[in-house]
Length: 100
Image 1 (cartoon, helix red, strand yellow):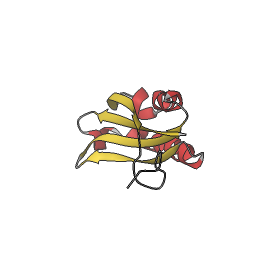
Image 2 (spheres, one colour; image 1 turned 180 degrees about the vertical axis):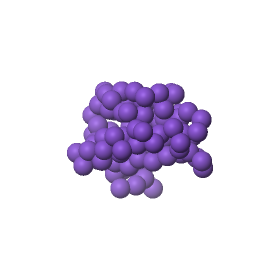
Image 3 (tube, one colour; image 1 turned 60 degrees about the vertical axis):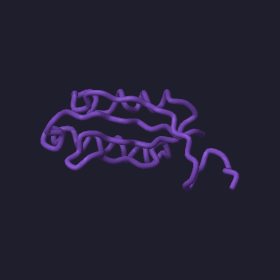
Image 4 (cartoon, rainbow, N blue to C red; image 1 turned 90 degrees about the horizontal axis):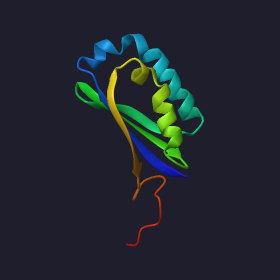
Protein backbone atom coordinates (compact mmCIF):
# COMPACT_ATOMS: atom_id res chain seq x y z
CA UNK A 1 0.00 0.00 0.00
CA UNK A 2 1.11 3.53 -0.77
CA UNK A 3 0.01 6.93 0.48
CA UNK A 4 -1.56 9.52 -1.80
CA UNK A 5 -2.48 13.13 -1.07
CA UNK A 6 -5.65 14.51 -2.60
CA UNK A 7 -5.37 18.30 -2.68
CA UNK A 8 -8.47 20.43 -3.24
CA UNK A 9 -8.76 24.08 -4.27
CA UNK A 10 -12.10 25.52 -3.12
CA UNK A 11 -14.39 28.29 -4.30
CA UNK A 12 -14.45 31.66 -2.56
CA UNK A 13 -16.79 31.71 0.43
CA UNK A 14 -16.32 27.97 0.75
CA UNK A 15 -17.74 27.81 4.30
CA UNK A 16 -21.09 29.25 3.21
CA UNK A 17 -21.30 27.50 -0.14
CA UNK A 18 -20.51 24.01 1.19
CA UNK A 19 -23.57 23.83 3.47
CA UNK A 20 -25.94 21.97 1.08
CA UNK A 21 -23.26 19.35 0.31
CA UNK A 22 -21.47 18.98 3.65
CA UNK A 23 -23.47 16.09 5.09
CA UNK A 24 -23.06 13.96 1.95
CA UNK A 25 -19.35 14.88 1.73
CA UNK A 26 -18.74 13.87 5.36
CA UNK A 27 -20.67 10.63 4.86
CA UNK A 28 -18.40 9.75 1.92
CA UNK A 29 -15.29 10.58 3.97
CA UNK A 30 -16.45 8.59 7.00
CA UNK A 31 -17.27 5.57 4.84
CA UNK A 32 -13.84 5.66 3.15
CA UNK A 33 -12.13 6.11 6.52
CA UNK A 34 -14.00 3.12 7.99
CA UNK A 35 -12.83 1.00 5.03
CA UNK A 36 -9.21 2.14 5.53
CA UNK A 37 -9.02 4.11 2.27
CA UNK A 38 -8.78 7.54 3.91
CA UNK A 39 -6.22 7.94 6.69
CA UNK A 40 -6.99 11.57 7.56
CA UNK A 41 -8.66 14.58 6.00
CA UNK A 42 -9.32 18.22 6.67
CA UNK A 43 -9.59 21.77 5.43
CA UNK A 44 -6.56 23.94 4.62
CA UNK A 45 -6.37 27.61 5.54
CA UNK A 46 -8.08 29.92 7.97
CA UNK A 47 -10.61 30.59 6.62
CA UNK A 48 -10.47 27.37 4.57
CA UNK A 49 -9.62 27.69 0.90
CA UNK A 50 -8.56 24.11 0.22
CA UNK A 51 -8.58 20.58 1.49
CA UNK A 52 -6.07 17.81 2.08
CA UNK A 53 -7.05 14.16 2.24
CA UNK A 54 -4.52 11.38 2.79
CA UNK A 55 -5.32 7.98 1.29
CA UNK A 56 -3.77 4.49 1.46
CA UNK A 57 -4.17 2.57 -1.78
CA UNK A 58 -2.27 0.45 -4.28
CA UNK A 59 -2.54 3.12 -6.98
CA UNK A 60 -3.99 6.60 -7.49
CA UNK A 61 -7.03 5.13 -9.28
CA UNK A 62 -9.25 4.70 -6.17
CA UNK A 63 -8.31 8.20 -4.98
CA UNK A 64 -9.28 9.67 -8.35
CA UNK A 65 -12.54 7.70 -8.36
CA UNK A 66 -13.33 8.85 -4.82
CA UNK A 67 -12.75 12.50 -5.74
CA UNK A 68 -14.94 12.25 -8.84
CA UNK A 69 -17.80 10.99 -6.63
CA UNK A 70 -17.34 13.62 -3.90
CA UNK A 71 -20.32 16.01 -3.70
CA UNK A 72 -17.91 18.93 -3.28
CA UNK A 73 -16.43 18.08 -6.69
CA UNK A 74 -19.70 17.24 -8.46
CA UNK A 75 -21.33 20.44 -7.16
CA UNK A 76 -18.44 22.70 -8.21
CA UNK A 77 -17.41 23.64 -4.65
CA UNK A 78 -13.98 22.20 -5.51
CA UNK A 79 -12.61 24.22 -8.42
CA UNK A 80 -9.42 22.20 -8.88
CA UNK A 81 -7.84 19.06 -7.47
CA UNK A 82 -4.89 16.77 -7.91
CA UNK A 83 -3.68 13.44 -6.61
CA UNK A 84 -0.03 13.22 -5.60
CA UNK A 85 1.97 10.23 -4.35
CA UNK A 86 3.21 10.87 -0.82
CA UNK A 87 6.33 9.10 0.39
CA UNK A 88 6.04 9.02 4.17
CA UNK A 89 9.49 9.28 5.77
CA UNK A 90 8.49 9.34 9.41
CA UNK A 91 5.21 8.65 11.14
CA UNK A 92 2.95 5.76 11.96
CA UNK A 93 3.42 4.11 8.58
CA UNK A 94 6.65 5.15 6.82
CA UNK A 95 7.17 3.93 3.26
CA UNK A 96 10.51 2.32 4.12
CA UNK A 97 12.85 2.25 7.13
CA UNK A 98 15.18 5.24 7.19
CA UNK A 99 18.89 4.94 7.88
CA UNK A 100 20.03 7.04 10.81
